[in-house]
Image (tube, rainbow, N blue to C red; front, side):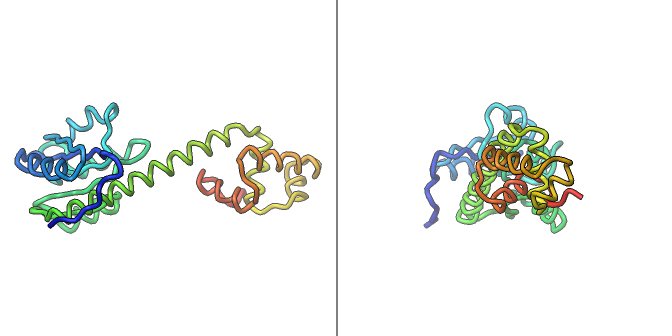
Length: 213
């Protein structure tokens, strides 16, 4: 008997395969276990509607006429939050599997795939997708806070996370140390942090280098 966790919500899984029998089989399997399974005969048909109706993860064949699975994976990576991909293929090779995994594929399964193996891969993909969305939401909130800083506050922000003391920041920016303290307090308040360590983690999330020199 196949053991699988029940989806936390009715997660949408896109199945992309040029073989209609494979699409039917996978659609039936995933629907049985509570997923909203949608099938597509080609990467192009998925990409045509993905902007308005994105799935939570994608199961894709590797070798398909026209746009292949790796091409589809690269196209999906261009979205703000890259969709997790599970490859299921009958013609996989080591080079293709390495390329897929390096590009972020969740798994690379060979046909005929075991039901348990596929369902576990889908759950891993959904977990990765939820994590990616959570991170993207967090970064968007941090970017909004960052946008509220004045230019001078941004300068102070970068110097603080680079490890500069107030007197060093004052000398570097040519302002009074007490003014630095005011800017620093505003930065901490606007970025909703209470310590330099927390501010450094924010900088890391935003891709701000730890050194300004």
